[in-house]
Length: 379
Ligand SMILES: Cc1cc2nc3c(=O)[nH]c(=O)nc-3n(C[C@H](O)[C@H](O)[C@H](O)COP(=O)(O)OP(=O)(O)OC[C@H]3O[C@@H](n4cnc5c(N)ncnc54)[C@H](O)[C@@H]3O)c2cc1C
Figure 1 (cartoon, rainbow, N blue to C red):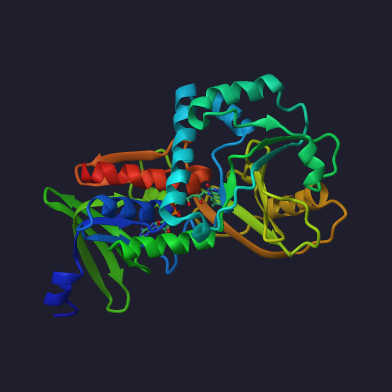
Figure 2 (figure 1 turned 90 degrees about the vertical axis):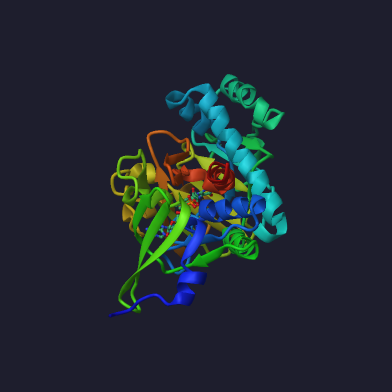
């Protein structure tokens, strides 16, 4: 007989009320929401990486809910009701995240969100009014206004550009937020096991068996639970090959500390494809995935030279004209996207619930999604 589980392991480590796959913001938020309502539940989170290894520790830290050009673009592929409901989920998710962890713990700063219009006539006043009216029921105020005066204040010099602004947007320290969320889930009673790639799920009438390879003992370990939540976002095709979800890689660059930096807050451009912000005296810049959609449809972490070259050029020509800078940090992250921007939050089979497809705004959407997944699991 080779390696077998001990009596003690069977008793204390292998059986749960709910197992969650994925320790990103959605998996951790799901655990917190379950344990909020059912503190006695045994909850296990299985994470393939030693650290969360998708988007949640690798994003840009925008606490945002959509810019005007992005919302106008969404209105071309989604109904008005769908767009309102999506923005509402993001906005509510953000409030929930702040309440759960506290602004200090997540490094939240409400500096406001800017949209840089590369051509100042790209958006008309009527279109801004239309978006404000549409989203009035979410924000209870006109969220967006034209503020061309903020272009120069941000250190951007091009006279052909325009700027929109909302004071409702903020930014977080992504590392602090995930650290606080991991600690919160653990303090509420969730067990998190990292370095634990789930190979297989097997559902039967009594519950779910989740198989993981134990490389140390060269054995397969089976965790059992009554129900399972799959929160694997961009990696979800492993479990749901037929769902409308694909991986989408995003690139991020961070400059050195730039003396006298004027840029202050979060900035979006090009329908949200480009984003940049101040980061304690540096600039964080990312996106431009639309330059190579096919190349960035990948679940592998890797540089995309075409895109990072473009981002450096954008920095040099648009954001920091006539300013020396170096790139001190560079990484990629993996999102989960589909033909629609709405998340997939549903019971996919009697014992399994999915909370996936967070798109590019999961910081805002992730907490709300976790709450909704938890509600389905414990109803
Ligand atoms: C570059 C970039 C910038 C972004 N910027 C922002 C931003 O500024 N603001 C914003 O709101 N959103 C942003 N996002 C999006 C946001 O980060 C995501 O929507 C959010 O983090 C998704 O959370 P999640 O928990 O669904 O997924 P993830 O964080 O990807 O978590 C899924 C987890 O599942 C694990 N997993 C997968 N398969 C398995 C398996 N078989 N076994 C065990 N574990 C598994 C993965 O390792 C991963 O840790 C950005 C994303 C990227 C990539």
